[in-house]
Length: 459
Image (tube, rainbow, N blue to C red; front, side, top):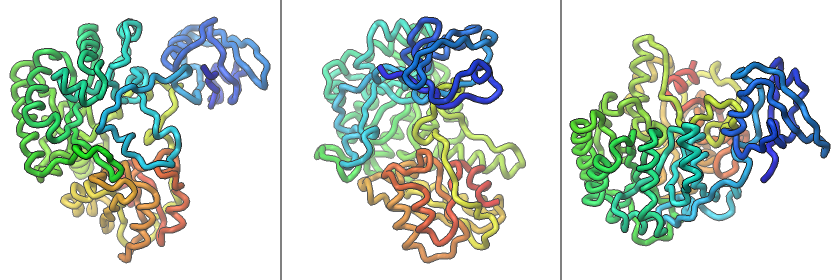
């Protein structure tokens, strides 16, 4: 177990007044060695917590004078202090197995840790779940959680996870729901494996076995060119349409029986089928927005609000880290930097996006131009790095973006890159934003992947 580091001590806070400093290592609080940022937050919520810290190899004690519930003013360098619970499944559809070799080590880490599910919205299969985990979650009310279901047929689920415990681990989902923990589920839909009739059974059994499940998102399989499983393939448009028909049928049955739609197909499935995404009411709060479910409709809704002069809002991201200031943001949630301000430049704003993004943005281009007060065009970046059917903006890499910009011969006042493609100021292929900016013939700016973010980048 490594000692968590105090990454930031906010000025004017109890922690700063008590002499805590960035770089200090946390040993214990009130005699307890916290295992994660959740336990840490519970400890520091008390009045006058007593810290044992280590600085330059020397341990010392500090009492932080504060009222109960008063923010302490610390941000830590990690969220899990003991060992992350790794995944012991071997799902043939897991995208981690489809990554190219030689990338940074952290990208190959498969976690199956309920704490990361609570903090960041990661999906867990519950195959390594224990009675102690259940007791802590229920006692501390650690929800919402996010659970990968894939299939309710025990044999098919075990086969998909390549883990015999996959046949029985959904009993923990029942226990969580009985403990009144909010849980969102996921099905990764693989043609000829768990779609069609198997999907129909999964949705029907979800209504009867897991009626308290908040939502179940159904997302299509993503394949990269590094996939080595010959039986895996992507949906055809007709297959996507058939699976959407199944999902929408069971949406209505769930609405009749449970008073909620429960089941939601991903935007990518609608795009593949060539269908229009459902209206806002079907998404019932966009609770799986980050899972690619309802992003298109939320974006269109945001445009309408901007046109009506209303405030620009988008669905809140999943995970409790936003209300837990000590938890460090990870991945696309991390702070990212932007290149120089492009607003003084003349010409069209070029929105850099993936193939799917271009498909859903083009129908609203004129509306975005009116809001932005300037021409806009879209630069669809082929994902040569991952290949396959990888076409979402969040998996664009720096090298592909550079190649697309260098090949672009049209006028450009600036290139706008969605923030979901970056972690800090680095793309997933470790190419820094600065390198993209150096290669571009016009300024590069990073903007939130929302209508308001895009319009704001143009003003």
